[in-house]
Length: 161
View 1 (spheres, one colour):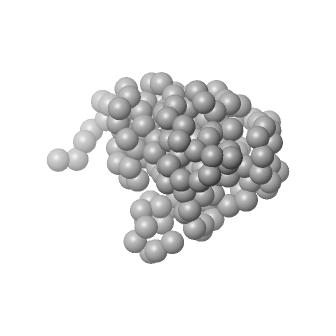
View 2 (view 1 turned 45 degrees about the vertical axis):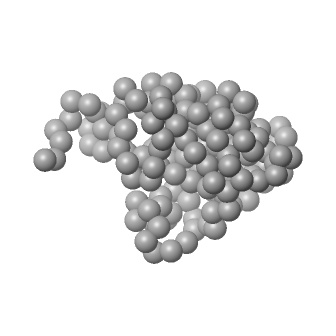
C-alpha cells in the first residue's frame, strides 16, 4: 500500500485493519450512490442495505463483507460470489443496522475477506466490542482483499463553507 492510499490517509489502515495488499475490486452502492474512500454520505442515503459487487476473483470464490463503525458491527455478509450485484446474494449473519451519527463526523468501513469455503463464517457474539483482526483469525479469513470507507454526519450538522 502506498503512503498516498486513501485507506492510510483516512487511518482505516492502522486504526481498523493492518496493512494489506488489495487484490480484488469491490463496489459498494447505497441508493445508486457509489461509496468512494473519504466521501461523505448522509444518513438518508444509507437507510437500506448496500449493494455489493466483487469484480475480480474466480467464480468458485466466496467472500465475507464486514461493515463497521469504530468497534461496532453494522453488517456482516458471507458467501458473496464474484459478480454479485446485490447484498441479498450473500448470507446476512449480522443484520444491517442503520447508521445514526449524533455528533461529529463518523467513519464507516467496509472490509472484504476471501473465505476458505462456503458457509465457513460464524457470527460474532456481540455487535459492540468487535475486533476485525480477531474475527478474521477465528473464522480463518486471512488478510483483507479489499476495503472502502465513507464519512457520515447528521444532516442538520453545521457544514464548512
